[in-house]
Image (cartoon, rainbow, N blue to C red):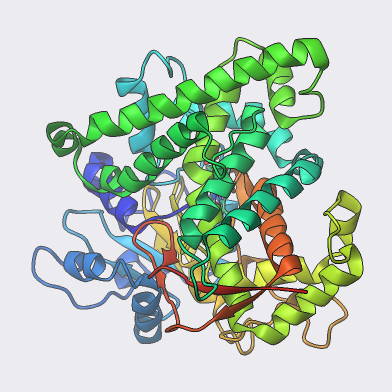
Length: 504
Ligand code: HEM
């Protein structure tokens, strides 16, 4: 997924890019010959300053990137670039589904996802005793591919996530109880987003570590893991932004390595305990962890690496998405009631979710899709192109960083009429408001060989959070409207304070 700051660092660090000739159609042929080809230099860009070009504009608008790019798109069109210092460092932004389709179709064997290689390097150099071979999924090339191939099938199979429905009922109930226990005198939530992060860590424990971590309940081991995850996430941006030398001088490099080491060690310890337990009671049978262990071998580090990568990439993404979903339901009470009625009809006042019941819950799924359409926590996805290609009629040479501005197409009235309205019905076949839209207009989990590997688990977590809370509480919001802050992963620009009123 793309974070603005990560991109910038990639460019600063990528010396190969600076030697690129942007206009030459090199050894690789551009395939779409029938389209009149315009040179790269003709791609429009906003005015900038000498030398620094668009660097400051880019950096100053990171927080409100969605508004900034909406404005740029109006001025410059569906494709434009931001010029950064150095030859070949321009960032190309696209926002029409056709260009997204072309970009993804040229992913190749090793799609290059800018931003992740910093962590890969850190793991190999800073933690060689834990990552002697491959730094996991948060890297590039053959190292990435080796792990991805090993986990792809077991992670992406729909049944893998659904296996956890029963247990997640319990974890989601713990979340509800915690939120309710923490309500202030006004029945308003305290630290909603942080509690949702704790829920995401507990869910990850259940699914990838074979353990009830008890983070929500304050279990000491779980709390230690949560502290390491929070430390890692808090420094994620700095690592992606600040040059390595400065990171080392300030001690941040070591702190992040320590966070990653704690995450690795706790995951590894818990996985080993789960394996030992399994030997006596078969308790891991059917779990994704067991499938990974069977596929990769009990001595393989891959199951632990997958658990750590799930903690690294799946906690804030899921928690922020859940916060936005609850917020959208709170500010759209009539939609919230439709959802409540569905829950009541399918599950009753106290019923738990099951795989079969989830199948029936069309409105629940539509609410989540709609919330993610409006505010995808990943503003878009990005690739460093592996080959020459044509986007919107312009020649794009290999080694160019192209950013799919997903939030612009998913909020475009052209594809989604009344795009600013929270309208779950647009996702439901048979509803008069149902819309058939180019799927490349809305890809909150990305697409292709590097699509989010945790998406099935994330979706399930989100369904469980929304269903459990709405089944028991009516949500209201009585404060200023929130916006997304895109410094890093999209998150609410302030604490989201929801009123939770117990349903009778
Ligand atoms: C709502 C929650 C989530 C969102 C919106 C999200 C979104 C994304 C996006 C957009 C990408 C990049 C895709 C691309 O470049 O085409 C990605 C990659 C990734 N996600 Fe997620 N994600 C979420 C939850 C999770 C969870 C729960 C996990 C782990 C269980 C996870 C693990 C990963 C990993 C490891 C990658 C890198 C995959 C690779 O490069 O092979 N994500 N995610």
